Length: 375
Image (cartoon, rainbow, N blue to C red; front, side):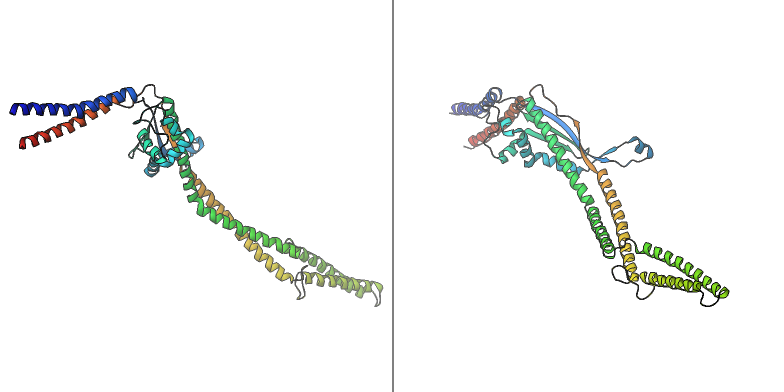
């Protein structure tokens, strides 16, 4: 009975080998070579760089040399995760209709995409067809995109580069806005302060109908000085007439009247500039108060102007510094256009299937022999 049992075991082992190894491999061969569509790869590579526009010497400044330095690995990592994200899938799908591109094979349930799938299904399929690789040591980001035609693979790769560039520009704009926000807020405050100071000065001039009280005072003082000179001349003339003519001479009366008019005019002009207690301006306020208010408004306006100049310089410096830190996406490999199909790797798939199926069959056979030997 030993020989029949041995023969039966051999037949079972052989049958299991056919069922577990040869049959699946045969089905896989038929599927890979008869059903599965060819896939083409487009490859591209780029790096996130930072533009440093600060010239290190006068010669570089005159020559317009711009030095480029690699951005931090964080920026490249963000871009790497963005390429794999659902947002990137949605953006590329909206631009190229990924569902239509990836469901082109008429019947390919394994490698083609079901056009009725959800965005989550499309994201999982995207992870199979778009393979980014990031080297943290060099900051280089390489990308391999698969599609069922060379043209589609190249278009998808170009769109990924385009969307990645937009994302880097967006991140750069956010960084610039963060770097200049405080300076911009300070500048806006000083602008409002300057506007308010100038508005108060305008209201003061409209109310008092005076452009510059100091200038008016200088004019009034010049007029008073002239009148005082004329008054002194008249008094000298009066004294001389009294010495050379008899009392009651008409000329003496004329000179006295002239002196009285001049004195009256001097008193009036002094009242205008507040030398006397009754001096008022056009608005009825004491001229000294008007001058004091004008000087206070002038100090406020000058302070506001100086604050504005300082805030503007700080803002311009912040903008310049932010611009020096601008990020750029620099492709070092433009999206390639495949000439032959490299995927799916049929022989690699078959070899791996044969290996794992063979291992599974071997382990199963050893377990079966162990059980048989115990009986």
